[in-house]
Image (cartoon, rainbow, N blue to C red; front, side):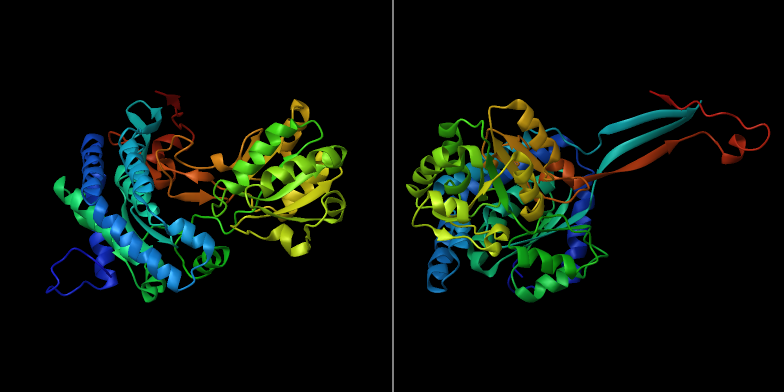
Length: 438
C-alpha cells in the first residue's frame, strides 16, 4: 500500500484508508465545478512535470514484464511511452471542459402549492477500481472521479506497480497543489488488498474491474458491492452481400490489427455466402499483410487455402492478439444469430450499403454498441466525447457501453415544503396534487 505519507509514519489500515477516502469524497462533493476543474488542471500540470519519472517507472515495469513472460496483450496495454503519456494528459485536461453532472436538476415539479420536488445529480461516493496492466487507466479514472465528486481507491496489477506508483504520486501532488485533500485518490499495490477491498461495502460504493474475463468474473463473485464492468470483449464484423469490399477491408484491418489487445477489437469476421468467394481473398490479404492469423470454418477454408480450421472454442474466444476467426453465413439473420449466441454484448458492426439490412442488424443485435460501416474500435469514452472512461459496461441496466461521468453519479430527491403533511391528501376531503412541472 503506497501513499505519500512520511515513511516514518505508521501506514493506515485498509479500513482507515477507505475512511480517509470517504471523507475526502465528501469534501469533493461540496466543491464547485470551477474548483474541481482547477484540481484537474493542477493534476495535468503535475503529470507533465513528473513525465520523465513516470516514463522511467514504466520502463522498469516493461523490463520486468519481459523477464516474467507477461502475456503479449498485457504487455501492449502496459506500455506508457512519452507519446501515449502526453495523449493521456491531454485527456485529463479535456475532462475539465466537460459539463459537471453533479448538482444537475433533471426534475423540478410542484406537487402542490408550496410543495416542490427536485431530483438532483450527486456523486456515488467512493469508487474501487481494480485493473490489470493498464497504467493509463489511473489518469482517466482519477480525473473522472474528481470531476464527478467521487473518491477513488485504485488497485493496479503488480506488473504495473512502478508506473501506478509514479502516476498516483503525481496525481496526489496535483490535488495538494490545488489546495484539496489528496486522500481522494489512493493506491493499493498488494494482491491481498484486492480481496480486502472487495469486503469494504461500508465505505466503497461501486467496484469497477478492468481486466480479463476470469478476473472480472472473480470480482463479481466475491463482493457485495455493486460491480460495473464487462467480462468479455468478443466483438464481430459482419460483411453483408451488399458491402463495399474495399471499405469493409479497411474496417476489418482497423478493427483487428490497429490494437488487437483492446476489448473493442473484433475477434470474429462473418461474411455473407453470396459475397464470400469474391470478398474473402481481398479481406484475407489485407489482414494477413498486418500479421493477422486467420482461422476459418469449413466454407472459409475451401476459399482460403492454408489457414487453420476453426473449432467451436474459437467462436467464443477473446484472443486479444493478431488472430481472427472467420465464418461464412447464409444471411444477415444467421449473422445476428451467431453474434447473439457467441458475442459478449460489447460492440458489433455491419458493413453494407443496404440500409434495410443495416436497420435489421442494428435493431436485432444485442450489444451495448452496434455500428454501421465503421470500426468497432470507436467504442471508447474519449472517442465518444466523454473526455475519458472508467470502463465499458455490457450489462443491460444503465450505464451501458463506454462509461464516463454520467456513470459515476446517482441522484437524490429533495422535497421542499411548508408544514405539508400526507393526511391532507387522503380521505373524503383529500386535496388533489397539482403535479405541475416547473
